[in-house]
Image: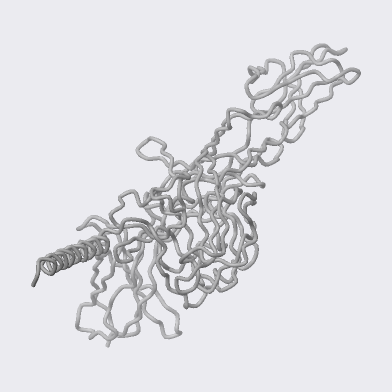
Length: 516
């Protein structure tokens, strides 16, 4: 072996060693990437194959604004438990809400906005992870927060980059993935510059800037243009030039001089009913904050009153919801004449320990209404407040308002009492069940009503037993247990939680049994 051969062999060995080191480094990097991926991506997602619910079928029609004034992008909030916020996908998490629906289902813009991106060839948004349609729209909340909403797995794109869209407008249709991938990213700067991400590494504590889209829409109302109507103006005609005219608390007052002397009049601004005040009746101080008043132009005699105070009401569609379910409340914001104030930001507040705290925000639509959902755990006093924007249009300046209180009282939840189907007449009958929410052990919160079937077939109450409360280890529920001695016959038992300061009257289903 000559020197050249020796050098060549050494060189080959050195290159081989470097090659092995390079492979080892690559394998190490690959392994590191598997446990800590460096960037966001769009992983392959399954195709929805489950049946559509009645709610999803109903959403095929024109949508209605949902929570916070936003339109749900598939027309319904019924996502049927499908993949949601932060669902794990290996080393990644899902930063969106998947909304299952049929192929071809329309996709609606959740609010007014400007199209940031509209592409039919975005990686991962087609069936089986192939390229597919994706639209990103810039929207703004009522508080001024700007965010991107991503609508993925779509086809038939109807909007282009840079175009303006209107709330509820059909922007595309759902493709063969049979679900809409919907995400929200406040702000327009992305951690790794990828606006198409559907999944981000678990190690990213900020989730790449994405937020729970459903929670975001429910807690950040849609920006609707504030369009108050003209102030309601009531003209009051008089027989003589009015003196000392003004208004307070829904009534206009003025004085006229006539042949019989001075007479002071009062006019109900809501009904127009007019009455003369008796001697000695006191005219209240005029409310110059709420009302404007001015004399009518000659030759008319009288004056006009304009009212700056809006009318804010809150009504519960059902003020005694089942335990754990929402109470639906509708707020209405109009002026004194009944004309709606659109775009008014309302706050739902609850009374808590003598203080009022905000629990929901919403914005009124064209009809001046906003719908709130609230799940009470006990009887709760609620109200809504309205604060107008600082820059109201001239001649349409309204004051802040507050509704009257509405109390929502939930039912307690009672399971059907558990009793053996057949019981020996010599044995003590024991009926037991569960009660939510938790009630103190040792107390008596539930009555057990025992009815016996009479010869004619009617059920007749024979006795009522107070059941004792018992704690259930590891559970928020309370066990209720009651005992009775019953004669032979056909019986049934029902659990009743009487109405109290916290809960409405609540009843369980009947449990039939036989005593022999």
